[in-house]
Each structure stands twice: as structure tokens, then as C-alpha cells.
Amino acid sequence: MFGNWAEREDSNECISGRLSFCVSLFDTQNPSMGLRIFSGDLKGTSLFSLKGDSIRPTSGRVREAIFNILYHRVSSATVLDLFAGSGALGIEALSRGAQFAIFVDADPSAVTTLRKNIVRCKVQDRSRVFRWDIGRNLHCLAGFADTFDLVFMDPPYNQGIVVPALQNLNESGVLQKGAVVVVEHGIKEPMQIPG
Image (cartoon, rainbow, N blue to C red; front, side):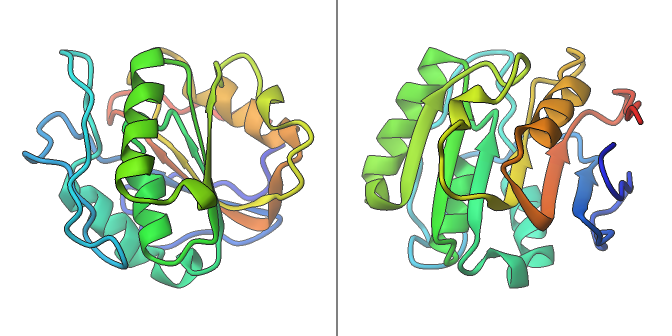
């Protein structure tokens, strides 16, 4: 159902095929202080972050590792950042040469923060934000002309959202052949991929 799938304890290698998935098993319960862009045109730009006990942004170290692994796939990519939160992953991709990014999150405060970060980084012309529940479907992308080379998914941990979101992504028809999907989830969260 999902093409070639690999769940890896490290993300140093992706499995190629119609669809490629790299699953990050990093548990980011202790994110680094401060949210900023690490490389590219926007290097050093600080970002607004979300507040709250349930918020666990991808740590800077993990973000940097992900982009070091995917460096050759980012330039000119069309990026989809699902459960985008502050937008740090998608904005980092834009900073490193991605052509365009779409950010999707259901939380109103996340969408507000995302929009502030997009304006702060002056990437309004290369991005779009949708407030949408990805766990239900990805109909918000219906009619969007482009397909995506690179997808980031950072859903809330241990809420059973990962598999339905992957199913919705797969059924949406918005992925390029050979697209890479990076999923961040808790180490203890079961990953039972259907099909």
C-alpha cells in the first residue's frame, strides 16, 4: 500500500522506489533552547515558537541531522510540512534552496505562529499555509497543481495519528515518484503500517 517502507532506528539511508519513507525515531522530549534556522539563506534567523506543555518542537540537533542526511534532496524540492507547528522544518528547507513549501496544521495557534515565521523569514512568495486536520484527510491540497518531493510529518506523540495520516498522504495523490517522507514519532509509539 505504501510502496517501499523502511522503519529505521537511524535515518542514514532511505529506501527508494515509487515512494520512499525515512522514519525518524528520535524522541525530542528535551528540545534545545531557542528556535532558529541553521543553514542557507536564512541562517541564524530566529523563529517564533509555540508555547505549552504538550509542545515538543524538533530539536535543533535533530533538524540539523535530518537536513545533513537529505541535503541533496532539498535544493529545488517542493516540500509539504504536515503537523507543521512553528514551520521550522519547512522553513529550514526553504532556506536551503527548496522551491516551495506548503505547511499544514490543525491548531489555530500553530497557524498563527507559522504565518508570523513566514513573514519574519520573508518567504511568503514561496509558501502557503493551511489550517486542516490531516488525520481526517488531505483534501485541503485538492486542486494544488504541484506534487511533493519531500514531506515532513511531526504529529503529536502517542495519539494514533501517524498511520491514518500516512494513509491519507498516500491516497492524496500529491507525492512525486520517489518522494521522501520523514516522520518523527516517539520511540515507544507503535508503527503498524497497513498493507
